[in-house]
Image 1 (cartoon, helix red, strand yellow):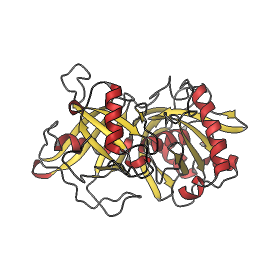
Image 2: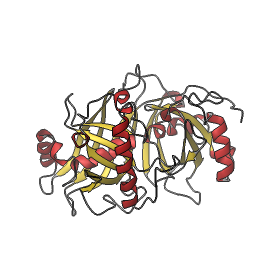
Image 3: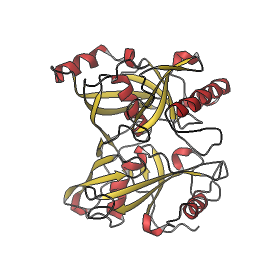
Length: 365
């Protein structure tokens, strides 16, 4: 299935090995990891197309009685034979509810179906609304997202419990801004742990294409040094020396120029994402709205006025944010208040994406 701007294989967890080593070997073979074109598997030669979702029922079970589906994510590498289970993927998550219905894990309702999902990798809870006329998933529709050609049926998502996905909180180092390798950064964990810096700190505009940034070896070398140290400071251990962990992710931010509220370039983390990760978008929106971060002074005046209109007492409210990426704008809503030490208390994030069923059957591994 395509989920958002990613593509991957969706399995019932029970159909795969329970042992992590055996599971990794199977997923490596399925995707064809270890070759730049994934020539011996179904991967697409890019990190956004070598993703795996594993689904199981959770309601009434021992894992989580409050949700319908457990979603376990795996990021399979492209050129190396490794699998990372540390992160989650918000784009692949878009396809979880449709896949759960298609595979019989959830029974569809007439008109639309609500599916509550627990992302096992991070603990986040997500409520998805899928269009199901005649109790069947409908993929056709008029909703468009940048980075995907054409239109499709909308899938509405609401995320909660996403602060401190892998670390001890919103700002794992305790600082809204600090300096690493001479670069001012914000280390933040909302949906995914990230190291965020201003593009200008690297002599960049923040509006470069993904291909242009991937060709800047001097920048990539410096960026990785900053990311690795940021990961250590966030309590994620030694990261990046061997390419077997994609956390923390990294992003550059700049002033918006195309009608959005923030321009960003997101790294996955050794290459620039062609669009924007759903998890990354949520963390970047939080960075924009949190006091003292590297992104705070990029906040548009109109957005400031809107949040104070929404919540006169504390500020905040529900605000719409557009994050500009190489192929367009990623739109989301953030429900928050201006409380706490850093003036940001997240209630939930909401976004609308699309998915499409591409194939079903057997993959030989």
